[in-house]
Image (cartoon, rainbow, N blue to C red; front, side, top):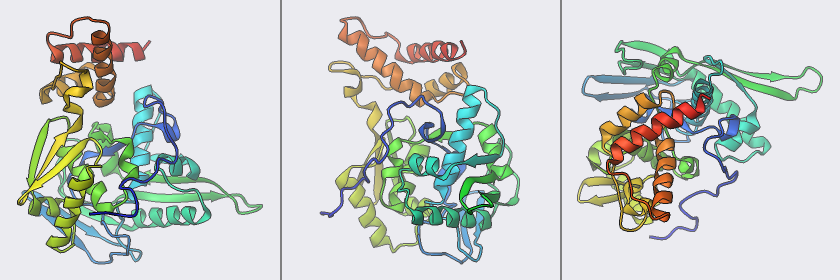
Length: 342
């Protein structure tokens, strides 16, 4: 299979430091609930029908406004807002449900163009986010209640009286989403998330990031994956999309393969090459839980990258690697967090 375009969009605004948490350079984060369940439509065309989803005891009903259900590209605005709030939390700065921002900062953060039409698209996205209503039993903040709410509780665009120039954009997150942020129910996304061209690729990455996480391997049936994606495509078209992911192998963080009707995700970050020749390590899932307690409020996956680089430096100096990688990583997280508080 060949395509005229490369599988990833160009990186329009290269970022050099994952630890810079100002505006467009904030570490990219999304809430776990929308990564787990198909809240956003995958279609750029307006979807004006009520969308329902059930999985076990989870019930989700998404009702559109006259402009349609919010799509997965509209979600970029929420990812931007969540990332800014988490950056403020981690740095001890004040934060709230209300976010004011410059449109260009959002465009750079989400790897978008900055032409006049792109600002019109941003306004349309705010409209759809404000108009989309959810009714669900999805837990946030450890509480399970039936709730009805919007994705955001309003948006605003400020203009000057003199020439009508836009000076600031803003939105207010729903209490449901803000509760998830306060409970730290968020995950870091790879920066290349915004370089994925197709909505289905973004959605599959979200699902892999939520379910595979830091584990070496995760599998799911093709039919169940399509349901979790919220894809209304014919089964054969969905299968073709997954096969394209397998062939190009461009999904961030995870390598994808498919045999019969089983789709497998393998964590690229567990590859032996990450720690040099002759030495490899895979951290246990419970290690990351302990790491979060050791470095509360900080992204343990970002810290893990620095830890792995530190281990490589030991090997380069001819020193012995940690005898207990899991304990070593937890200790590294504790010391790393202490340094940030100085």
